[in-house]
Amino acid sequence: MDVLEKLEVLGAAAKYDVSCASSGSKREKHFGIGSTFSAGICHSWTDDGRCISLLKILFTNECIFDCAYCINRKSNDIKRATFTPQEVAELTINFYKRNYIEGLFLSSAIKNSPDWTMEMLYKTIWLLRYKYQFNGYIHVKAIPYASLDLIRKTGFLADRMSVNIELPSEKSLRLLCPNKTKESILKPMEFITKVAEEEKNFVSAGQSTQMIIGATDDSDYKIINLSQHLYKKFKLKRVYYSAYTPVNHDPRILKVESPPLLREHRLYQADWLIRVYNFSADELFNGKDENLDLEVDPKVMWALRNLDKFPIEINKASYEELIRVPGIGIKSARRIIKNRVFHSLDFEDLKKMGVVLKRAKYFITCNGKTFERFLIDLEPEKIKQKLTDKNSLQRPQQLSFFDREVFTSVITGEI
Ligand code: SF4
Image (cartoon, rainbow, N blue to C red; front, side, top):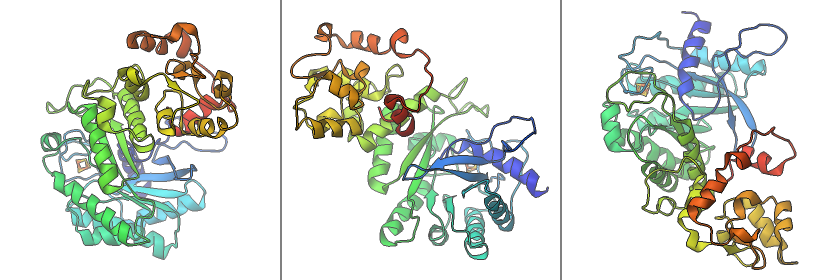
């Protein structure tokens, strides 16, 4: 098999790993400049908000493991391929020189043994760093069960490493990944955290992980609670959620017609609330329902379950209270605190500061007044109905460069 064919197989095989986002499209017309060749170029965001393009591939899809949800499991009859370290290094450097990519996202199935696979990943990025003097971004997988010594050597060459946690509970892991144990995933994760704390040039862009959503009956509470634990204990940069794509027929997997994308989106929003807005998983779910409300975002869901904490007075509330109001983000809360020192704020001021009044108006007062008189004493169900009213909120809209509400939320996911 030539390198281009391998690239096609192993670029396509990598698309189920969402630790970085989109892969190429399948548009077939060939004319003019530019290429959407589907083999493995994706985009990822850096900490400072830049979007970079990465060559996203598996080193091999010849797996000795048999995870129920995975297209590359050993029991599937699919086209298999394995690169050599030299091939991946050459591809990366040639794509880089042609300005197709700025970095590499290198994942892998487990061929021969975890140590053999980890060694190949190490050799690949060693070649890139030392033979080709490649100083760009490299994200590489740490393979479960691989020796910590190999992971350590690799971590000094990589910017980011990730070990996929795969499933939200040990029970689900036992059911769907009989070859993996909780320890085989958490041990390398813990090791990477420890070395990163001790050594300056080890995995300098931090560690991330991925969890598959909807293949098992684990609740959103369990998922967000686990993410919270991972952020605290292992100081992960990100937990990525991947709506399960039904690629295998396996009686152990929950029946799903299509990937639960809306649920995945709500989980990302809840994740944002625990990372940036200081919510805890217990607070968000409040023991009432173990799953997120798909009709409204998690901040609205929380506010409706805690209406006794509202309305809050904009001119007096603390920063912590402000950021919990639906429609008020980090930036607008800071602007409120800064500006109310000079004069008391009204609803017009809030609009100019980027507050999304169509959501916030149910939960705030300005100088003791509500936005409209009828908003007083609304029942949670009534507010929810108004917030999900298709005519008022979900009318299709053209994105604008200059509409602050849409612009900031598209970039940051802020809610
Ligand atoms: S070890 Fe990874 S590649 Fe192999 S079957 Fe499991 S999830 Fe798929």
